[in-house]
Image (cartoon, rainbow, N blue to C red; front, side):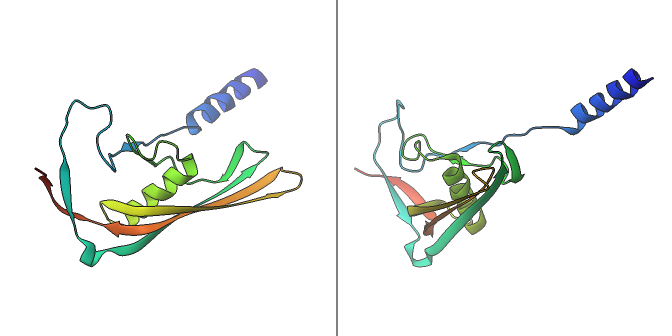
Length: 142
């Protein structure tokens, strides 16, 4: 009887645990390793540019147990922002989506990390700020 209960509890735990991932890729500067060769000029709506920011906060226990989750939505670029950390990519995604802008000009990242109880409990805060603008139109330069 105990083996049956243990098996049922194990099956319930397996069904209740899940994982998800979300990835969004967008070229932010230009085309890299692409057969298209063209010069494009973007007409940016600078009159309505606004200061935007996004913040990601995390808390972990023993370095592997997340206590505060931010999801798996992050922004990747084919060229310029390849070297961003996961937290920086998440903050950039959050700032872009919350402000409803096409481009974030000159993003600046700040990170703050704290550790307590000899590293057993850690917190971090990553913030991106920049100018959010929308693209009115694109045209080929001559």
